[in-house]
Image 1: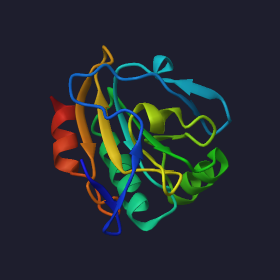
Image 2: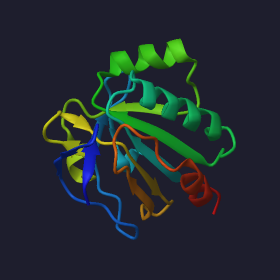
Image 3: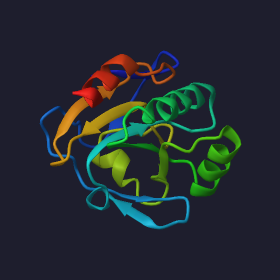
Length: 162
């Protein structure tokens, strides 16, 4: 799989996740600097990996998932980036984001490494989407081939509805 940033290939470090895999554990930080692990989350979950929440494409993506989240009360959508939790919280407050949860991988980089989204050259996370069911089985994976482009929302929403 080749992933590009502004047309230039980048190196994704970590394990490449596939549909059918068991979702790997991670340790992320919430907006209050508390640890959040996969084992702390329940039900159907969507993990949206983005380079930086405060950029144009990430802004559009998070707003779209925030809007769609209202249609799926039994699904939790998490947005994961390397942004500091304070920056995530400030951005969400300014943007009126209330239906998705932001988590930061800045400290341990365990999400990036365990889900194969850590960009070696940039120290950021690649744009990707993972849907995980109630038994922690991965039911959808999308690593965006061009990091500056949005994911395929229709496919993600179709899997969530199923």
